[in-house]
Length: 636
Image (cartoon, rainbow, N blue to C red; front, side, top):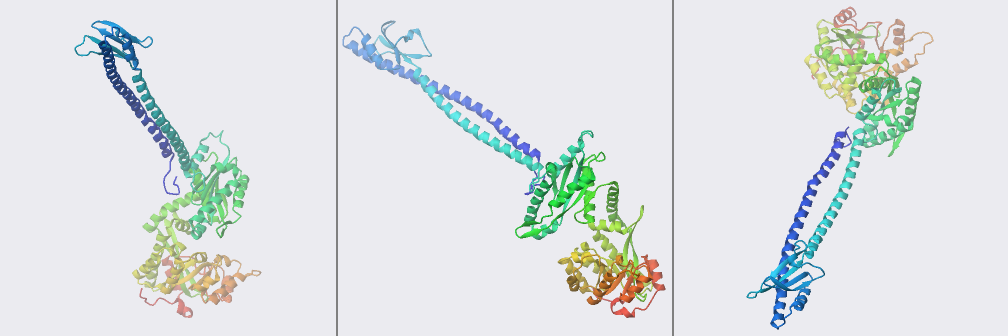
């Protein structure tokens, strides 16, 4: 998954966090052992110095006691025991003492039942002897080692207390760190499976849930339907009000979808942008699917309002039943995507359920998409031309219609590959190829003596948005020695209403260069009359769908009459497409239509056949010479 900051978050990275904490905890084990060894060494060192100090103290005590006893003897006292006892009792650590002459000890002092030095007790006390110089007597003192042990124990207790405090602090900090890491791990695992903006399952997690459902045995798999949803109008909202507002709308859409289908909330995912998907559990019948879709559609009925913005969105939905024919998540999503694309083509707010016919059409479109680019490069495309004639039958111009003859599968209809070219962007190289072929054929026809004023080519909105359109047009004309007046550019009415900004200025620029601009399929779109008035348009081509029933008794031609009147008021030429009967032509002539294009006069034909047709019907064009006359050399 890609979060809002653009960083990849995976479950592996989440598990790495806890692993690092465990490694840090294991790293403290050698430190703890080292601390224990250090404490033992410190205790041994402390005890060693305390024992050495105790021995020195015992020697000092023995000398002090010996001094007292020698003084008592100097006072002619025969019994030294009281003096020995008095001197020894002054030292609290002296547990026993003896006054000895040679090998005979005549006086003793004891605290309780403390042993004499001769009895030995190396661990409880230490013995020391004082030998004054020049005397045969000495004092032997047993000094208690309990103070040394107590001092060592006191130091060890202090070390233990400090160590325990340190270990306690470390343990507490480690527990807090572990809790933080566990929380972070949960957050990372959640981020690895959920969309950061909406909280829904992300693409990878949704694929996993879908794959898990499809992996169940058929006997255990409950009926379910996959819905693939795309918001209608969201791109315009996002472009108009900014991504921040778009994010707010997506959050609100998520809330509404969850409220509309609470039973499917856990399996709802955002697959990217404004595309959502959901698995409807226990839903497989068309009526049940339609009911769920109605709930989703109705949830978007209230407008989205925020920060002085109010917007209405719809949703196009593709559905596929997760039956035995669907084996993988990839296949299920592909089918749902195909159905959703079909819903988009049918118009906003539609539901399309995937079936075999839709699948075959999708495969056909995939075939066309893969074969179209090589067809453009290898010259499999060619042009046929349909004449545009005046009401007197005289020649005015021809419209170039692209055709595709596949070397293996024969002729492929334009309505199949033009839409694919628009969707994939191949319309740009296709348009360049059509312009090149039209210029080439026009020059070839004129060299045969055919008086052909102009050739008309269709231009799509995507071509108008291409900055290379004007250079490509001018380059093709210059290469073949033609001028802008030799070429008419047809743009559909819907495309004219959609273009804005740079595209609109391109049309104005082309018109200023001398290109004729024709509005094709007029009457089928939603034209803005003020915009038509502002644009430099030379021709309105009334769509052939309005020709049916024209001139017949009982048929009301009010729409065609209005369009002809509009063309006259705007001061542009009017052309009727799809004229097939003389009755239609007569009515159009009487109504003031200026040009006709249709099977009544000629079907689309290749250049060679067109040359024969034009020579046979060469006529006078003086009535429209100011507009439709052949090109006078123009400097490009």
